[in-house]
Length: 183
Image 1 (spheres, rainbow, N blue to C red):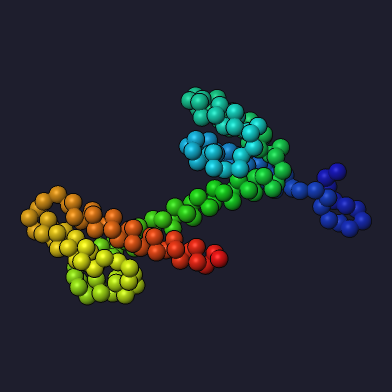
Image 2: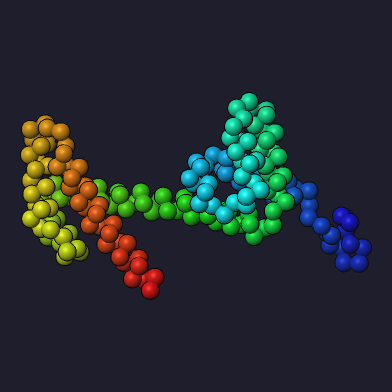
C-alpha cells in the first residue's frame, strides 16, 4: 500500500531510502555484536536465539561467507522488536561512555602524580584538602622515592606505586561520591 494517499496527498508508508537506512543500521549493530568478546557479549541483553548466529559469524574467516553470515544475522536482528534492538544499542553506548569515563579518571590520576612530582608539598597539601583520608607520610615518601629513582635512572617502582596509591584514593572517593548521589 505504498504510494500517495489520494485523499490527503501524504505518503502511505516508509520510503525505500528510510527502510535501507534502517537495514544498514541493523547491519552495523550486527557487526558490533560480532566484534565483541564473549564476556562483553554476555553482559548485553541479546536474545538467546541470536547467539548461534553471532558465533557463526565470528567463526567464518572467508570474506564473502562472513559478509553473507552478517547479512543473515542482520535479517534475524530485524525480526526482533524495536525495544530489544534499542536495549542492545543502549548497552553498547553505555560501554563506550564507561570506557571514556574510566580513561578520563586515569588521566586525572596521572596528572596528580605529575603535579606531586613537579610541585611537591604544595600539590600534596591541595590533594590532602580534597582527600583528607589520604596517608600524608606515605604519599610524601612515595614522591621522594620516585624522584630519587628518576635521578638515579632506576626502574620506576615507586613511580608506579604512587600511581596505584593515587588511583585507589581518587577512584574509591569517586565511587563513594557516586553512591552518595544515587541514594
